[in-house]
Image 1 (cartoon, rainbow, N blue to C red):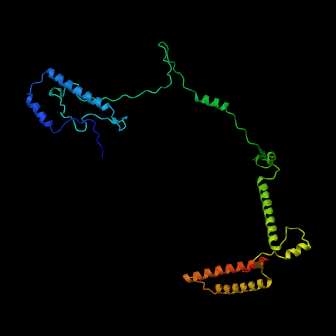
Image 2: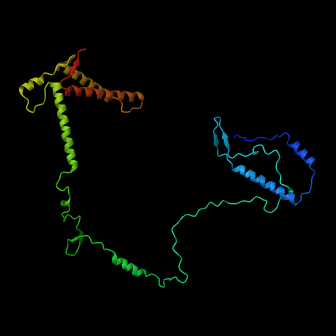
Image 3: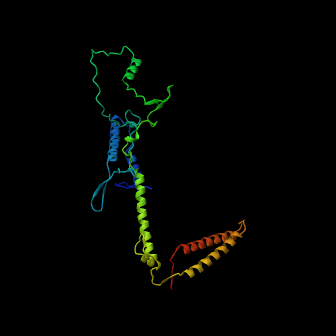
Length: 311
């Protein structure tokens, strides 16, 4: 949907027809002569010029604060509602010479600035044309003479018949001793040794910390003394915890092994065909229970000291 902006509106459409009839009655028809035709042509030309000037003008809008804004829209009088009296050319102006619509193409082409052309030869000078065709064979021979030949690769002969082999990668030339890293430890071995040294130091610290927590040894000695052995036998006391004795440990291990045996028998007595959801669930539960019992047995057998809560 478009909005119409009317700048001038001074016509009255209700009186247009009546006014035209009054003019036609008051002015009788007459024969146009040459002067009248010229006047009509001038009037039509002046009307076209006015319309062209109005078409080229830009619209000026007045704001509430008094500021004038120049817009790109082109406004003209009587373009929305039309003129009160439509100007009509006289009959003598129709189909006359140089009175029709003329079209002209705008010439906006600009030639680019290029390099200066060489001057033209003089009037008396003549163009010298080559009398002979170029000798391509001679030119190729000269190019071949100027070309640097590629040196042949070094070779060695191992048989009297003359069998040739390349000498570079045969192992007969000492080519590796000229390298910068010859006789040195590779970089990847240095990195590996450094990583192993750091890991050994971390393991030693962790082992010393575990010995201090489990056996009460303040540090780790390579040759333990008798006092160190006696101190190692006494685990540190932890408030609210007690150390599990050997009798309790054996009872728990015996019960775990019995449970492991029973669950193993149940697992082995299952049917080979697992064709129902219940069988799949039972098999999965037995496997998880067996795995948990094996982990508990391994924990009790490998841990020398186990603390049990008193609460």
